[in-house]
Image 1: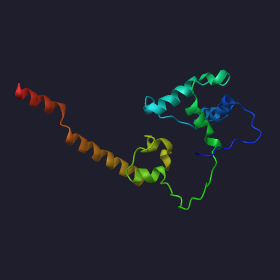
Image 2: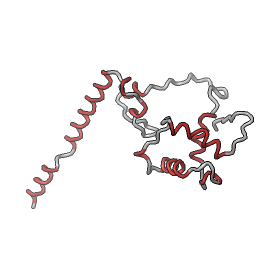
Image 3: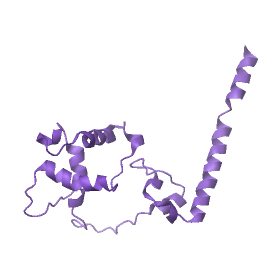
Image 4: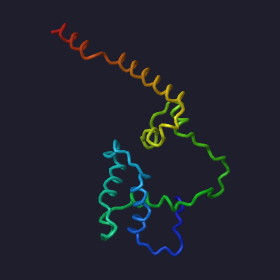
Length: 159
């Protein structure tokens, strides 16, 4: 379980807390939802809850609000070490470092690594690697799959 610490003296109800934590973040584009995952199991729940949430309605107009409430808890998650962890913290590679290593999408979320990077900050050599890799991948894909014209010619020969 991840410890969540709300500010002392907080008298907000759940809807007000969700609204207060998320409204300004959505309005200033600090939260971006992956549209291409809109229909996947958990993302669809978040999309639905964000779209239907109404702060002034009873229970925020939601029968279930677990996903949007979890997102709203983010600012209140206790930071730092917890318990008796003795391992050295693993330093995560930046999105640009991961792009340079050939990754294009985050394995956990499915999000494009480019979605969180200012294109002006990507070094020219990384951009060149990405372009070269994309060209090579496309060539390999075309070699694996014959063109439609070849398939039609082969079929016509057997008719």
